[in-house]
Amino acid sequence: MKSFAALCAFGAAIAPTFAGVAPRQQSKGSLPPVTVRGNAFYAGDKRFYMRGVAYQPGGASDAKDPLLDLESLRRDVKNFKDLGINTIRIYTIDNSENHDEGMKMLDDAGIYLALDANTPAYSLNRENATTLHQSYNDVYLQSVFATIDQFANYNNLLLFFSGNEVINAKNNTNAAPYIKAVTRDMKQYISNRHSRQIPVGYSAADVAEVIKQQALYFDCGTEDERADFFAFNDYSWCDKEDGLQTFEGAAWDRKVETYKNFPRPIFLSEHGCTEPKRQWGEVAALFSTKMSSVYSGGLAYEYTVEPNGFGIVDIKNGKIEPNGDFDLLKAAYAKAKDPSGDGGARMNGKASQCPPKDDDWEVTTTKLLAMPEGARKFMDDGAGEGPGLDGTDSSHWMGEPSTETAEPGSGQATRTPTGGAGPASTGGAEEGAAVMGAEVPMRFLGLIAASMVFGAALVF
Ligand SMILES: *[C@@H]1O[C@H](CO)[C@@H](O)[C@H](O)[C@H]1NC(C)=O
Ligand SMILES: *[C@@H]1O[C@H](CO)[C@@H](O)[C@H](O)[C@H]1NC(C)=O
Image 1 (cartoon, helix red, strand yellow):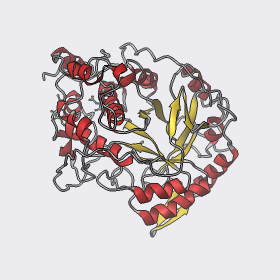
Image 2 (cartoon, rainbow, N blue to C red; image 1 turned 120 degrees about the horizontal axis):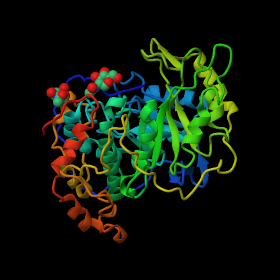
Image 3 (tube, helix red, strand yellow; image 1 turned 60 degrees about the vertical axis):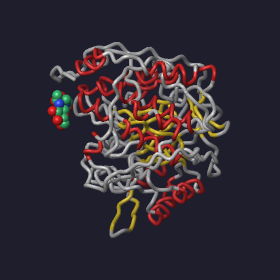
Image 4 (tube, rainbow, N blue to C red; image 1 turned 135 degrees about the vertical axis):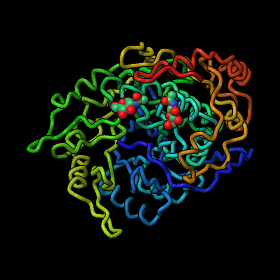
C-alpha cells in the first residue's frame, strides 16, 4: 500500500562521517530477542506470532519518525496495549537520531519493532533498468547500514525489511536482483558488525502473477544471499456486509498449500481489506492451526487514518479517537489465541529452487551484482552517522553504483563484530576479496536491462 515514490522536500546537504569506532554491543531492553528457527520465529523458546499494526502517522508522503515524537508515542502505546498487540511496523525512521526513549517505551509495553531500512530518499528507484542500477550504490547502503547500527542493540528490534513493494507490477520484476543484493549486504553488515543475528527479509506486494516467484527467488541460492523470512502485503480477505469471509472463500487454504514446504517464516506484512466492510475475519484464520504451520501472524494496516482510509484511529485537533475498526480489531485479537506448542512449525527445510524465467518473471540470471565498492569500507569501519530524513530525490544518484557481478557466497561474514578474522568455515575475508574482484561481465547488465517487459534495449 505504501511506496516511496513520493518526492521529498529539499533538505540540507548530507555529510556522512565514517567514524571507525567499534560497534556498541550492549543489548538494551527486557524483551527476549526474536530468532528464526526453521520456518518460525521464537522469542526465547516460545514460538512468536506477530500480532501487530503498521504505524506511520502522517503516511508515506510526509514521512516523519514516529519514535521521536514521544508525547504522541506515549499516547499511542496505551492504545497498542489496549489492542493487545506485540509488534508495530514502521516504514521510515530518522537514522541520524538516537531512539533509546521511544524503543524503551515500546519495550516496557511488550512491543517489538519491525523496521523498514529504507527512507524515501535512500532506497532503490525502480523506474527503469538504469535507475535501478544507479540507485544501488554506496551512499544508499551507508544509510541502510546506519539504520542497522541505530537499532541493532535494541532487544525489541524484531527484524529489518530490506524493501517494501519495490516490485509492484508484472513489469518491474527486474528489481528482484537488486532487492536480493541489498538483503545480502544487510545480512553481511549485521554479521560483521553486530553480535546478534537480526532477521532480514523483504515485504512483497501481492502481485498475483509473481508472488510465488518472489518467495522462491529470495530464498534460493547460497546462505548469504537467502532472506531470513518472506513477507507479503495481502488484501485478499474482504469481509462481506453481513458476515465474515471464510478461509476457503478467501482462498487462504491455497495460500497455505502453496507455501507448505517453504523453509523460512512467512507472515503478512500488511493486511486488512476494507471492502465492502472490514471486520478482521482474517485474524481468526491467521492464528488458527490451519495456518500456523506456515504463517507466523501479521500486521494490520494501519494505525492512523490517512488519505487512503485504512486507519483504525482518527486524529482530530491533535487528539486520537479510535474508530469502529479499532474495536473490531481489538475484539478479533482478543478472541484469537496463539496455537499451543510450536503450532506445527518445521525445522530443516531446504533452500528453494530459483524460479525459472517466464512471461511474468523476467529474471534471467541467479547472479547478483557485487556490493558497490565504496560500501566495502563500512564492514570494517562502520557506517558512521546516518543522513536522516534530509535527503531529496536526487540523493538516489549521489553514490557510485556497482560495477561487478558477485560469486555466490560473496556476502559471507568477513570479520567478527569485535574486529577479529572472519569465521574460518566461510573462507573469510580473503575469499570475499577475491570474489569481489571478479571482472564485470557487461552481459549481466545487459540481461537485467533486457529483463524489462516493456522496456527498450538499454546501452550502459
Ligand atoms: C530512466 O528514468 C530516468 C529518470 O526518470 C530517465 O532520466 C531516463 O531517461 C530513463 N531511461 C530510460 C532508458 O528509459
Ligand atoms: C509498468 O506498468 C504500469 C501499469 O501497471 C505502468 O504505469 C508503468 O509505466 C509500467 N512501467 C514500465 C517501466 O513500463
